[in-house]
Figure (cartoon, rainbow, N blue to C red):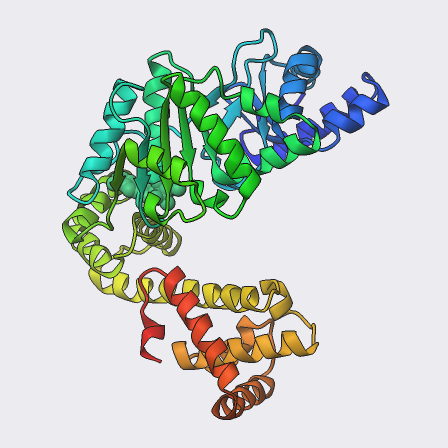
Amino acid sequence: MVGNGDKLEPAKEIWNRALGKLQIQVSKANYTTWLSNSQGLSCQDSIFVVSVPNIFVAEWLSKRLYPLVRKTLVDIMGKDVDVQFVVHNREQLSASPLAKQTDGGTSSKATQYRFNPRYTFDNFVVSDSNRLAYAAAVEVAENPGSSYNPLFIHSSTGQGKTHLLHAIGQLTTNNGLQAAYITGEQFANEFVLAVRANQVDKFRSKFRSIHILLFDDVHFLIDKKQTLQCFFHTFNELYSNNRQIVITTDRAPKDMHPLSSKLKSRLEGGLVVDIQPPDFETRLNILRAKAETTMTSELEGVLHIVAEKVCENVRQLEGALVYLTAQAKLSGTKITPETVNKLLTSTTRKQDIKLLLQVVADHFSLSAEELINKKRDRKTTLARHVAIYLMREGHNCSLTEIGKELGGRNHATILHGYEKMAGELSINPNLANQIAEIKEKINSQKGYSKAYQTI
Ligand code: ADP
Ligand code: MG
């Protein structure tokens, strides 16, 4: 008998055992089509979550195989469990913000969504920079379809858009309504699968029974003509049935260039609100709210420093807090205003170097691993030299430090790379342009460190 594993590993093992048993109970074709690409994700509160590659598999399994799967798991675990099939994607696997759960296959009820319990209206810190977005979100959650439809929220990353969507989802679900949350990326992926399976109608129909559609990061669809078209139809269908639609993007509707003017004017016909980056006072309030559970109040001075240093977005603010708390725990020391200065500088630096390597790799269509490992073709070598140059110029990294970041290369190799790049740059304007472009990308992606703006 296996205990109630609440970590990833036990769930994975339990599911592997279940797969072994299921394999001999279903036909080979069914096993290969529906089960072979599944994974045990977690088991908490007697809910066993299995990840599957797409919505069709999730639906098929919950309708057709739910009783058998459940019985198999109950036998293995020696206790009663419910089973949920969720569509596997990166976000769900890493932060598990959202799990899509089925009704267990016992009826044809519409799919239910589970929202991240951390993202509620109650723990959203309201300030001038987000007041309107917050108020509008509360309004549509309380009176969906009747006030602002669609509600369009835009902001740069990490300012609370997803948080608000989950909060709406939670409140409306508690009020007995069907709310669905989907990201632009999920929508695009599912659409592609639906096209392949010749099931576009079925894909669209899954939104029909929904009262509130929470559509996150729509900008992801911008360069996907067909998917946009499908989104437009879905939107129209819901809209004309008076269903509430809430959309988020990283830009204003007027900047969603490829959208048809019809859709644009529909979007603008509802309420368009933005969220601005938080000012110092708000950052401090957010930190105070988040610190209640992670830090003690005597650290008010520390929070001031964090709010001063980390100023781009709330996600980074949270990240800094988590980092400081972990450091305090690990080292067994108290976090003081003095140590916080030192610690935040070093995280910033670490994060910046990681970002730098990623941006350089992306620029040359490589992976960060390729930049680090032994590949020595011309493109990879050039990319590596660019990385060396930027690490030295932008972060004042020592040659040894750069060598370490680049998979343990020695000091002489790094020096050679640096000198080569510096020499090339003085005679090759194209390369200089590329470096400028990379720096710009880094700056646009990075949060609070401004190291590059000075080189
Ligand atoms: P976005 O979707 O705009 O990129 P998120 O909603 O993912 O941003 O927010 C990033 C993180 O910051 C989340 O953990 C969220 O809970 C938190 N956050 C953002 N704004 C606020 C706020 N006003 N109050 C409390 N937490 C916030
Ligand atoms: Mg988001």
